[in-house]
Length: 76
Image (cartoon, rainbow, N blue to C red; front, side):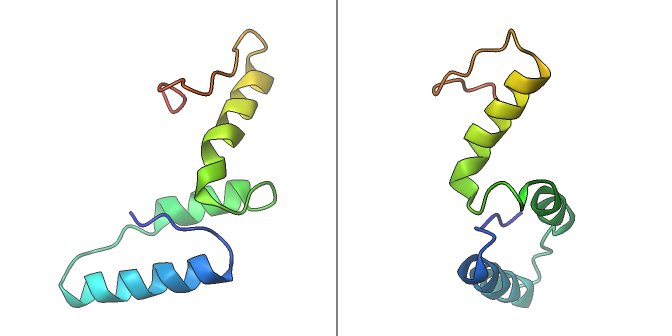
């Protein structure tokens, strides 16, 4: 999966990388990237913000969850 920012430059970069890899016969998974984009596009614009965004959502869903910038289990 190629995960680039969702701005114009990120979309162009993702397309170029995908095209190059597909020329080598590598199948690129697009569904997950598109799903992530559909869920967060109004809230964040870059990949680096995913971690903080997910941590905030976890805290909303579970008030006892405490955001820790070094929490390696944020995606679990």
